[in-house]
Length: 103
Image (cartoon, rainbow, N blue to C red; front, side):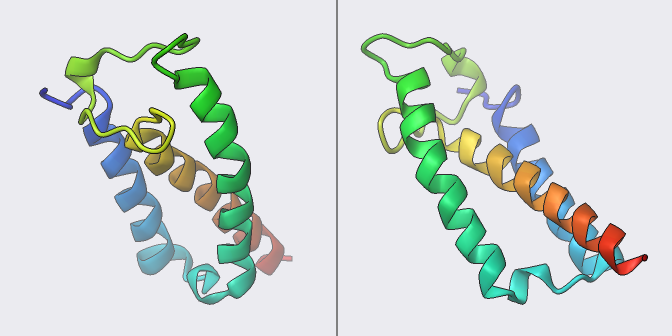
């Protein structure tokens, strides 16, 4: 269970996006209730879709277990998927906010 192939980049992506916000962009996105509501909406779609794609009974997406943390919740979803999802959605929203402020 090295986790180097998927877990470490997932954690780094979250840290990088947070560093981008706190050290460079400073949009205040994390203080907005609308941001957190959007994250709940993303999770509302991510959980059933990702759960269906990664279910152990008939997976469509198969992960090398040596490259993940092994933690899967809920519906057998690797927790790393949530980290990457957070980083991706947050990065897009941060860049959107930065672009909007630059007008």
